[in-house]
Image (tube, rainbow, N blue to C red):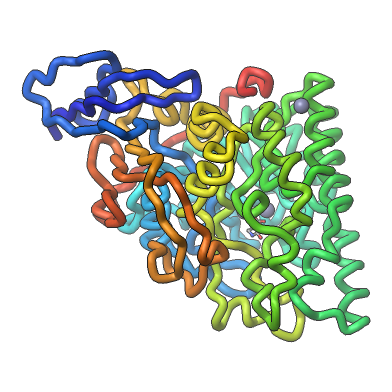
Length: 467
Ligand code: URP
Ligand code: ZN
Ligand code: ZN
Ligand code: ZN
């Protein structure tokens, strides 16, 4: 594939920022240093750009059946959107078929991605039916390069919902096997009751989605998962943390020395409960779980990113069209498919609201988007850093790029964007996947099927080391 030399840029890693050239040979970074000789390598002018490791999104849902429908983005459109946001690797949730095995889910997701993926990818398995057979199968996921499972404490009434006894047993098995347990932490029993009561009262509008999933319900389940993980002796990853109350539980676990990783997402920093209250049925565009919260929760979440209580920033990209999909819940908010698109906007939200506003520095930006993602999701140091031997996944970030989000300029396959009209300041000018130019100036250049499966292995980093 030849050699590329990125010259004149500022390399930004989780550790620091410095002027350096980056030499790429075939698919790998081979040298990072000042004034590297070209020696026949093709030069890429990176002046005025920040040279960053390709971003990793450890939380996407492509081509996933959910809420009686299937996500709007498949592996072609979803990974195009990823590239346009500077993301070069995703870890997607392979959903176990209720009648099927965990291995079957991995195979099925492999078929969905093959021939379509534009970025590299791995799979978590989302467990939908934690039977004795399923539990026994967990350790074998490692042989398939899968290092994590997600277990749902929410969504009672669907097969996703998992009771504590099963969750706890899965934690014990995962600990022995060296598999990371991720939890969707909301109390499914309480939500089911609150939803029933709301519908009986005739409270059917989208905002009741949030009102029947109060912050305490997330905080309680977060604390419960943390305590169960402590008894089981296993590390835990709490995904999509939405509010201060849940974050406090995570902070407390850190004070006690427990290994608890936590993720928040762009929607919880850029959007709020007010969006769910929009006129007519517009609020349906903002239905995700956990729900959007009152805006005062955003400051504590920023603080969590600053001090390392939240080590990763994933999109939870789970896109549904407004027409024909979100509309399924016009007369009943419980029928609105849960999820928002965000794989394209993730880094731009974080730069615009975080780095530009002085809430986090550019090195924390890289840590939560790439380096910590690679470590927690078992891909470090092949992914997540710019160092000799790493895959040459590179983002040339333009801190002055200005993009106003509209449906028309999105690269995914969704008929709306929750970020409509938001002005992003700072974005990817060019993106390389394993040394190949995959995106430049708004245009996706990668070929379908060029993304490769990444085998992952979980080596638990200390939550404090990541902070
Ligand atoms: O609303 C959401 N988050 N949908 C995606 C599924 C999940 O729980 O992550
Ligand atoms: Zn979830
Ligand atoms: Zn803390
Ligand atoms: Zn999700």
